[in-house]
Amino acid sequence: MLMYQDCMEASDLAEEEIEAVAQHERLPEMAALEVGSYLVHNPEGVPMLKRIILDNIEAARRRGHPEKALELKLVLKHFVDIHPSSAPAA
Image 1 (cartoon, rainbow, N blue to C red):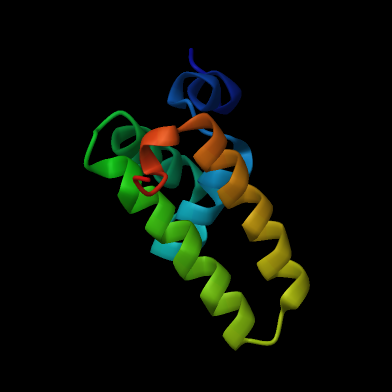
Image 2 (image 1 turned 180 degrees about the horizontal axis):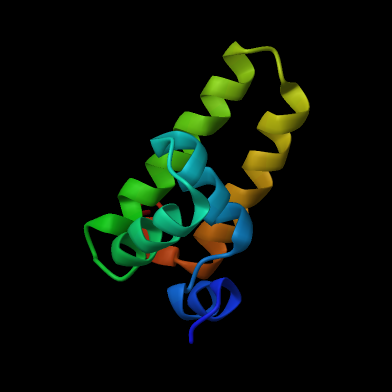
């Protein structure tokens, strides 16, 4: 039987990236893991995941949570480092 950790490792996403999808889409973590995994393995999905993280950063700022916004910026940096196709073209 597959456990959450096994699925997470197969998703090519970090736990924080899955949490960002869960927060943005208001999904349980397992459902967010499935959505995130689908998106990250799709060329059109990688920019969508980046947009989800950017939306969460903006939402944290609007709500007056600068610490959460900073934490999400680190999540974004990690995501772009691991998935360079999400970075803007030079």
